[in-house]
Image (cartoon, rainbow, N blue to C red):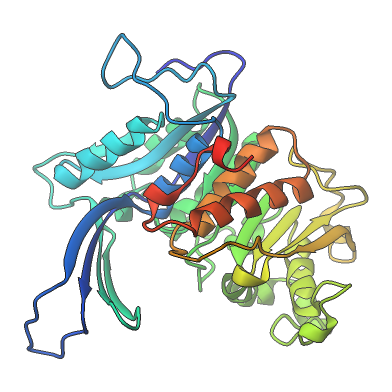
Length: 392
């Protein structure tokens, strides 16, 4: 796939899964066999979902196949090119995932297909949902995702992410090995590549990028441009990294903020303290999604937040630096919430695209908030992600 010279590239490094969903009237007890109400499969994984969100939200509607090849798509009219880096098995699930991503104009040349002779297949999530209560049971097998960036594959990942195709923004999650995530964060910092990290699920250990014993998550966060996570993930990540910062011993309490009575007109104290903690580690822009309560965001520094980098001061001064700009945005009201599965991934994709469009952080958050609202009005995961024209 050729990238026009005026396009910016978003590279998404992350997971690709196939979801196996069974709907049942009630959950079976051990040893019991029940008939199901329905069964479906679909593409998923946070990495794949966010890549599709970036692709769809950078253009008005569905793209058409180019005349040159049934597997090649014309993306000339989109200001953003999206690349996916990860791994799938050489199986029906893996090939279907790649087909779905290509169908949305995502460049999948960076997705490794593990040969059929190996024992590792495509990642899967087996989900059983009880119809009445919505209660579920989920079994996740990382499959090929578990080997991304492990051993000799780290060199391949570095080449795909930092090679000659020119990444304007790197997007990552936490459904591939933590060591890979930390290693890529460190390498991105060395190379000056802008990163948006969505640490979901939130890591509960520091990790080590390449096994050299040098640095973990806390050190890797210094210079990170964008950190997007939900409130529970923010608390977990703050707990994981607190022992490495002065803020953990200077009266900073990320577990116990004020109640919601203090939220307006000032941001909730707990969320403000969480953002201050991440700013103290060198993160420039912090976005905490709150579900039905909206979104809290905070920019570090002396001026308004920017999606194109920022002015990092000396590391020793960062922990005393107040946020230059903070805000809480209410959730967009929708007629009926159908399915929230892909809301977070849609938010990340919209924020990324909005930033490359030149929006400030607050504007990008508002745009992402609207996009996520469109997603929850539909059922399904990847299939519910809207196009740009459906949000504007």
